[in-house]
Every structure is written in structure tokens, then in C-alpha cells.
Length: 621
Ligand SMILES: Nc1ncnc2c1ncn2[C@@H]1O[C@H](COP(=O)(O)OP(=O)(O)OP(=O)(O)O)[C@@H](O)[C@H]1O
Image (cartoon, rainbow, N blue to C red; front, side):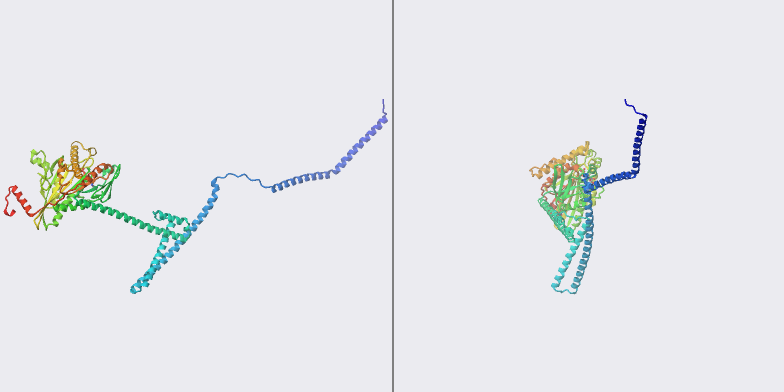
């Protein structure tokens, strides 16, 4: 084993201590050295940091520059609503239109003004020329033809120019106000549309020409319309004339004349809706709207609801003259109950609108007065009522008769229908009263009417429940040759044909209605037989047909007035009446004048006197 001395140990220790010191001193030297390098190192670090930051910045700038240099990626489209797509275009167009409209307005105003000025100038020129022409004419009536021609051609040229300006003015005004001239002519319209379509309107001249064309077209249209109107008028008047002449020929052949009178809508009909089914087409035709379509009827005259009593009588007047001339004349009214027969024949209650009867009374005496220097007249009348198939004398009051003859039980004297040798009907047993004036005759008529049977029905508050027969005999003696003519005027207001259900007839009214219908049906049979020209005519089937024997198919001039309602609710009855009347129109009468020579009439008077037991003087024969 090895052993170390203390010295050695010390030496070693000392040695170790000195090496430690050396290490420590080196260490200290290093630290000292380090501490002296510190600011540089900081600066270096700082430099490094700055360098790093610079590099960073450089990178960023490079990136940015690169980014700037590279293209922008496209933005995906956002879908937009169609209206917002169209809106700009629309706005753009609207602006264009607005400006075009205001331009056009300005242009139009300018044109109107220009045209107005031109028109005024043309007018002035024309007036000037006319004035000049007038004064020349006055001064020099013998001016040469050449000058006159020149003047006239300038005048017509100016007139034409002025007309052109007037035309333009009108057209421009039309265009400005937006009014359109009335044009119905299709060709004309399409021609005009063509012009407008070609854009001619855009120019002043274009507008003027359109205006002129418009006016020309209007003129042409007016001409065409006038011509059309004329053609229609000619056609209508020709048609009317044809009907008139046809009727005249028929009358000459002896055909019964038939008038048709449409009465106004009544209050009851109005309450039911008042629909109209009957229309007067012209003076001779009437149509009825039926469920099977319209039906037209022709008569000698058709009177509308507006026709006055005067108008109706005007066409009847000639027959009164015939009765005075010695003819057998019959005027009778036929129609459904409430259709206006009594209004036509008698008139209204207050006689504000007198009918044919009172007017005839006046007419008879007017004619007599006019002929009093040539003729001597005698007027007499009987008035009958055919009630419940019994003829009653209306000059005899039933009450008065019953009082005078209690055994008569309120029945008037028996009246019978007879015919004289000439076939003229007369009422045997009926009182005949003379009248020397229209007033007297009317008083007799009033007396007769007071005895009539009238009552209220659903259809008519004052319905005639009987047929009224007024016969006026006019005897005229010719003061020159002594001949005597005897005319008879029968005025008949028939009771209305009716349906019991519609009129609300009960008990005795039902009996009246049945009797009326029976007599009218017998009249219908007579009319049918006569119109069909059958060998046998059933006159004897009813008292009414006996009374009317000489008027239907006899020797009378007969006029039937068929009265009808205009309303839809009475269409069936109206059709029946019109068919009935059409048949009557086909009947031929043989009217003859009843004139006897002076000798015959004297002998007749002698016979009458002898028959009644009077003495006959020598001068009577
Ligand atoms: N043309 C007319 N103008 C004015 N009113 C009229 C006309 N026709 C008839 N009327 C009126 O109609 C109503 C019925 O007329 P109207 O008494 O004459 O009928 P009608 O045919 O005689 O009837 P009926 O057979 O029942 O006696 C009356 O009030 C009458 O005044």
C-alpha cells in the first residue's frame, strides 16, 4: 500500500488549490470578456431581430405584390327578379316615350297654329276674291267670258284649298283631343289604319293628309248613309203604296175594309210587367210576337196606340158621305173585352175623346148643311141592344115599359130583324126617331146608352155586356130631279169576346158571357163561310148575324175595326182577333146605291098612305 506524506499532501493540496484558482480565473476571465462583448451581441441580436422582421415584411410585400399581379377570381352570379332586370329598360323606354310625346305635342301645336293661320289667310283671300268678283259683276255686267271663267276657277281653287285647311283643322283637333270621327265603313277604316301603320302620321303633311282622308271618308260615309236612307225610304214608300193600291183594288172589288187599332197598355197590364208583343210596322202592317215567332198581318190601315180619335175618324169620314149618298154602310168594332171597342165607337165617358158614333152624328149634319141647297134631308134612327140573344129597343126604358104595361114583366116590345126587297136589314118593332141636328141625334144616343147593360168585369170596369147597334137612316130628296136616295149607317159596338176564367164571370155574368160568345161564334161561322165562298152562309144561327146580314156579304160598304191589346198577356186573344179580322177582309160585298126615281118614290108614298088608311089626293099621284 501506497502512503502520501503531509508535505506531499500539502503540495498536492497546494497544487490542487492553484489549479482550481486557475480554472476559476479562466472562468472569471471568460465572464469578464463576455461582459465586455455584451452591447455588440445585443446589437447583433437586435440586428438579427430586425433582419428577421425585415424578411417577414419582405415576404408579406412579395405576397401582396404577387396577389395583386394574379387575376381576381370571378364572383358567382346572384339570381335577380325579372322585374328588376326589366326595370332599367322600361325606365329608359318611358323616358323615350315621354320625350316623343312632348315632341309630338309641340309638333301638333305648331301644325295647328300653322294650319289656323293658313286657314285664316285662305278665308281672307276668298272673301277678298268674292268681294272683288261681286263689285266687278255689278260694275261690268258685260265682262268677257274669259275673265269670268278665270274668276270662277280661282274661286273654286280657293274654296278647295280652304276646305283642305278646314279638313286638316278638324283632323288635327280630333287627333289632339283624342276624339275619333264616327266611321262605320270597314274598308275606310282599314285604309286609314294602313296609312297610320305606314307611319305617315309622323310628318306634318302626313297628319294633314290623314285628316283630309278622314274628312273625305266622313263625307263619303254620309253620302252612303244618305243614299241608304233614301233607298230604304223609297222601298218603304213603294211597299206602302203597293199595299195601298192593293187595298184600293180590293175595295173596288167590294172587299170589306178592315182597320186594326192597337190600344195603349192598360194599368192592369202595366202592373203585370207590361211586356209588349204587338208592333205596328207601317200604316198597313202589324206584327205579333208569338211563342212560335213573329206573325205579320196586313190590313187596310193600322193605328198605333198613339193614334188619336181624330186620325181614326179621318179615314172613316168617306163612309159617312156614302151613307148620305144612299149606300148601306156598316162600321163595327170587334175585339177581346177591354181592347178599346167602346172607346173607338163611343169614346171616353167624359166625351173628351169622342169616338166614331158622336163624330158621325156631327159629320152627317155637316154634310147635310153643305148640300142643303140641292137636297132635302130626313134623318131618323133606331138604336138596339142585343142582350142575352134578345133584341131590345134602347129608346124604350125597361123600367118605364114595365110601369106602363105591367104584363110585360120588364120586357120591351118584341123587335125582329127583317130585310126589305133590296136585302137591306131593318128592325121591325123598334121605334124610329127623327133628328134634325147632331145635338138631337146625340141626345137620342145618350137616352139609348142609359138603357144599356154594362157591368164591371176583371178585364174592364165598364164592360159592355151586350152588342150595341145604332142605325141612322138618311133620306135625301134631290131638289132638281125629285129622286130619293135612302142610305143607312149602322154603327155597331160588339160586346167583347172573352174567356170566363180571365174575366171572373159568375152566375148571370157567366150567362151573359156565354150568350156573347155564342153570338160571336155564329158571326165567326158566317165570316168563315163567306170568306171561303161557301154556298150556304148560316146567317140565321144568331140574332147578331141576322142584324149584320146586309153588312157581311150583303149590299153594304163595310168597315171592321179590330181592336187589340198590345200586351204579351193577351197575345192569344190578339191572335184570334187578327185571324178573325183577316178572314173578314176576304169577304166581298156588293154595295149598291139605293136611289129611286121621283115617280117610284111618289107611288111608294101613296101605298104607305093607303096602307095606313089615309086618303090619297090626286096631286099625290
Ligand atoms: N185608344 C185608346 N186610348 C186611350 N184609352 C183607351 C183606348 N182604347 C181603350 N182605352 C181605354 O181602355 C179601357 C177599355 O176600353 P173599352 O171599354 O173601350 O174596351 P171594350 O173593348 O169596349 O171592352 P168591353 O168589350 O168589355 O166592353 C177604357 O178605360 C178605355 O178608356
